Image 1 (cartoon, rainbow, N blue to C red):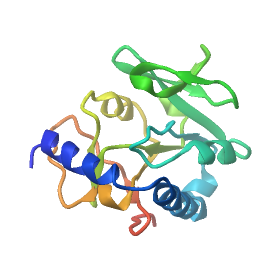
Image 2 (cartoon, rainbow, N blue to C red):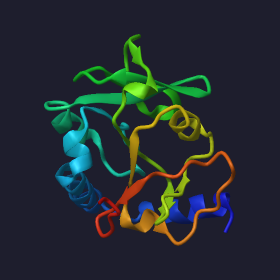
Image 3 (cartoon, rainbow, N blue to C red):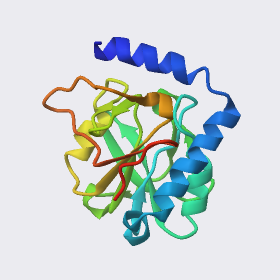
Length: 180
């Protein structure tokens, strides 16, 4: 299946999930991450403000920001700026994604852990994004641990990859986790 076909197929499955199912899967996924030593030892964590077809992150951002330094991406041309999250600082930005306000960007090297979104993943950590390459370019600049999060229906057998595609180190869904 091509990347375009895979995006279409997976998005059709995600749209069938109810809000209750999405929130239940998010609770399971982020609970598993919170129990991991990787999370416990991380001080600087990048999340993403979820879109309706992504695992919900907004409650997790709020909860984690009480105990960890949380950062969110903001689209800047072809790149992502990383900004420390503060409650009430989000506004609708590029691609209708909620993005942080402010000019105080941090370098990718500050991050210990990055929670990675995607349209689909396979068990090897290969990621199918939305096709613009923002995360691939960004992840190439950091050595942070990467954990992909998604709904069970977004975990597929195989993601076609290219040289520039960077896999996540770990994957967590409601029914599958590769965390140590």
